Length: 474
Ligand code: SAH
Ligand code: SF4
Ligand code: F3S
Image (cartoon, rainbow, N blue to C red; front, top):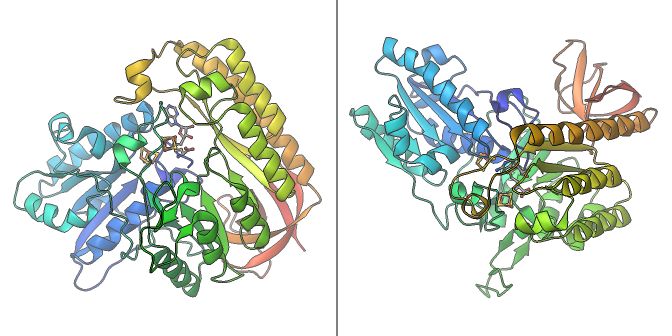
């Protein structure tokens, strides 16, 4: 899953916009800001839904809010620093308006627990990712003048029955969570500690949510999980059936069920894991025209020894074999990735292996990060974070350079090609233009014509930069 240290507001993942859920009975105002991955964004929609039934409507105007909730991310130290800075700006607001309540949700809440109350004196409420149903009760305690905390992780919670309040304002694309938590224990990663054990959501509730979105005009759903390929319903991790009276569902089957909601609804998914993505998943994408020919497949490193140290469960060769399978079964697919530079003990040769892998695979996009040591992880306990900052940065710069060259070459190759594009919104730069995406998830800017947001149009690519493509309607 792609992440950002910025507010989701500023990222490509969608906007942390606040839908006005104002109704007569909802007199209190909630200002909700999300950081981190799409899963957090999706959780904020669950939170807005729970609180809309408890007297809160959301607002985009922080000045008028009675309650500020920050849905936070711990993936890298920088992500936490951003939240801390944000909290200090709230301090001033609270001085001027003592009744204002401030809560921290999400991964940082889970990681720091009650320490957050002590560290950040202005925080009234700390709620972990599996405790959102308890929010109304916790708010009551806070309204009574006490601090409240619930950071219990659950083995069952999937919020399956909660209909999320959609916080993006375009009404075209939506996230649908299919799993929560992660059992993988990659040695660098904090997610298993902040999100708990992996669990899958009832497939019928997923399909119902997708159908409801379609009926409300949405034309794209992204199925979300830290490792979507390990989705399994009514099956143990060893494949044993739990209840003979109900059917079992794996990820490929789930994706097919969602694709059958309507041929006009695009289906995407994030994130696939190279160790678990079987040919059945790729074949299901090939079978349904509305499942996008685009796979985000984080590699992290191009060196097998380092991958072992990262506890990723695959080698360079295995990864390249998955790429070959994608090309064989889906000749039209594009692939993007995540990369970490400067992981513990990374040698210059190992870094070169990552560079050579990027050159070989030619990803259409990549999210590239410097390794940031996270408390409690296996890497923190076992390995030394020994690559100096300047070397991490230099390696990152080298990787970004190659990736940008690849990306530009990829976009240049698209000039003259025609794509079906789903119109997402008016372009940021011009009111006369739209932004939409093709199935490869590339942003394309083009003149509006007589079209509306949410429609499919055919666009011919006419030019590009290293970040996006422009086109004309055909
Ligand atoms: N579940 C997804 C990843 C979620 S985190 C997967 O397995 O691919 C998103 C990305 O953040 C990861 O792919 C990784 O590249 C990066 N990341 C995770 N922990 C990190 C750390 N400690 N330092 C730097 N980058 C990290
Ligand atoms: Fe983290 Fe690995 Fe799980 Fe992804 S698969 S969330 S990187 S532990
Ligand atoms: Fe997502 Fe960040 Fe948590 S990436 S799962 S919000 S640590």
